[in-house]
Amino acid sequence: MTEKARKELDALDLLMQDHREMESLFSEFEYLRQNGRNTGRVIANACAELKIHDTLETEIFYPAVGKAAEDEEIDGLMDEAEEEHDTILELIEKLEQTRTDHKQRDAYFTILAGHVKHHVLGEETERFPVVKKLKRLDLDSVTAAMKKRKAELMAETGIAEADEETV
Image (cartoon, rainbow, N blue to C red; front, side, top):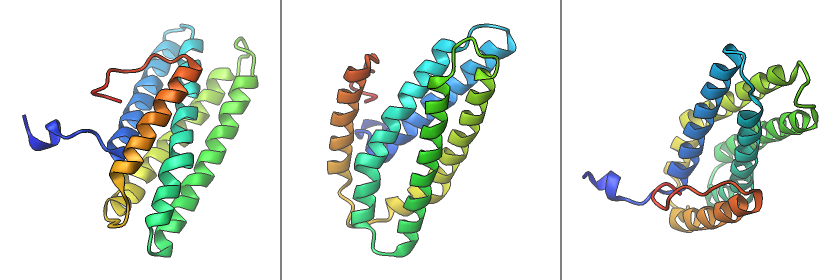
């Protein structure tokens, strides 16, 4: 087993794990939609997961990064990320207010998926590489806070927790 495999997941790993989960849900949605199957469960799960992810980033991760940042470049990147979150939350709200039998619901979700994919790309290619270089960021504290808060949010929403290796 490699050193990285033995190492516990840090905050960035946890966020990227959420990104992979969303990609999986988007793929499942597309499969169901293309085969004329009901997409309601996937849409509901994706919205719940996205709201948890949003809370972790906006309550814990972004503020910690902002506090550790020493230049305005990072502030600008975090501001952009928060704007993207606002748009995603507005789309989730619209989806949640749309009847499950509304013919446009899948289209709304497809738009949401596009925004999320754009956000993930920006985080993983622009923001996370900059965050990794922050010397003043206490990644262990951020990771612990995120794990604790995620467990609370999952319990509140009734989402089954993954095993401790992946949370």
